Length: 242
Image (cartoon, rainbow, N blue to C red; front, side, top):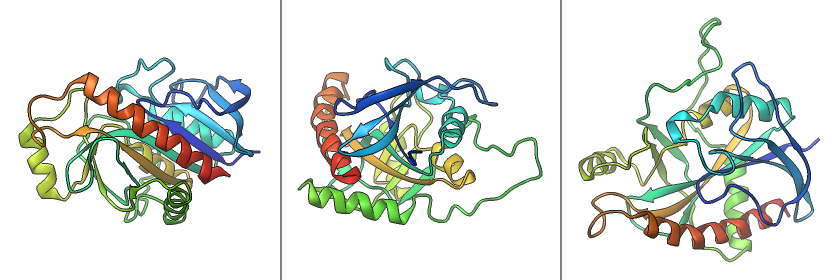
């Protein structure tokens, strides 16, 4: 049974190099997952792929059934998750098309189902380090192997969406220590932790965050940078699983 899953975000609704073996629809105690679970072979390794926003991309960040997605992966025997997501860049080298492997999260989302333990005895998980260090180290090594420049550290700020942020919100997030801004990192990471699944993220910078560049952010700009960033991500993933 495969133990590695890749969750694809905006710009990665399918893996073009994945040799698909089967597709599965699952029912979970938490409802329907975003999409079917696709099992296949990538660069000699078996993986399960899930499109976080559905395929085609139809589910907004705040409407994703994160619990069903993570529970479904656990049902299929997954022990390790690499989550890919498009983000905005706030600091330093986090320029459009750049890739970061974040090591920390600040959660600004609200109203989402954040735990599997709602109807049980209160359960607290240690979330000091939200991303698994061994998986992060493997991703960083894979990037070097594929000759892809990345940032090996970074703090990801998770906002509610689906709107983009204001310039003032980004200034606040920068003061808080955020390097990246996205909409899907939580509660996904915490739910994986609750089920004892190793979790790491690949953050693909689609644009400078609000107020960090001239003018407004456009979808044309985001799509242009994502095309390059996701192409590099695909190479990184092939090196990672190979």
